Amino acid sequence: MPIHIEAKAEEVADIVLLPGNPQRAEYMAQKFLDDPQLYTDYREMYGYTGTFNGVEVSIQTTGMGVPSIGIMLEELKMLGAKTLIRVGTSGALTEDLDQADLIIGQSAATVGTTINQLDQDITLAPGADFELIKNLYDSAVNLDMPVHVGQIATSDYFYGKTDDYTEQLKRLADRGVLAVEMETAALYNIAAKYGLRAATVLTVSDHVFSQVRADKEKIQQGVDRMTEMVLDTVTK
Ligand code: ADE
Image 1 (cartoon, rainbow, N blue to C red):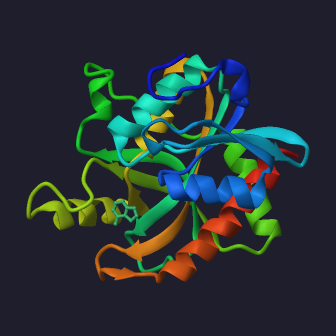
Image 2: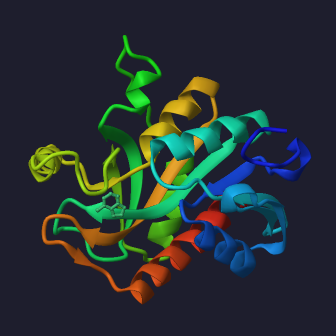
């Protein structure tokens, strides 16, 4: 049994959704899964397995940031998980995106270097699994959900390391990066290391430069629609 996810391999499904927030993991499992069973609550990093469309799915909390999701991903790999989909929120780097729009992360740039320590002498460009993001994109379009596919940035900082943080994010925005969050580069990097399928789907919770944040209800609605779409797509 791994150290942080207190589960046996048979308790974790091949397909795992990855929200950052433990309360959100619990809520998603209760709302969307049939017969959800809690398999770990160590450090309140709740993990549940249930079914959707009759297919086994787990929902595992990752916590915030690269070090936390890194632990969870290594342990999910030990437990036999094969398809990993992060479902989270992000700060938009462009006013072309609206609150609660969906973003599918095709690739993840980094601000901060934690994940780049894995392979210091080479620069990987790990991206999402193509078939997974194609299916997710098609589902979103079929459901008339506003959806954008492109590069996102994974930052080690929420508030920034220095006064230059906004300038760093502006440079990313100038290069077409859609949004910032804190986990996907680790997901794509670790998935590449083990040959796992990975994708990230995000809902826009805030606009970084104007510092406008969607209200809690709007974020909740965005997360709900996104979760249902992701679950339906990966279990079809
Ligand atoms: N997740 C949601 N909004 C974010 C932001 N502005 N920066 C980093 N991660 C985020």
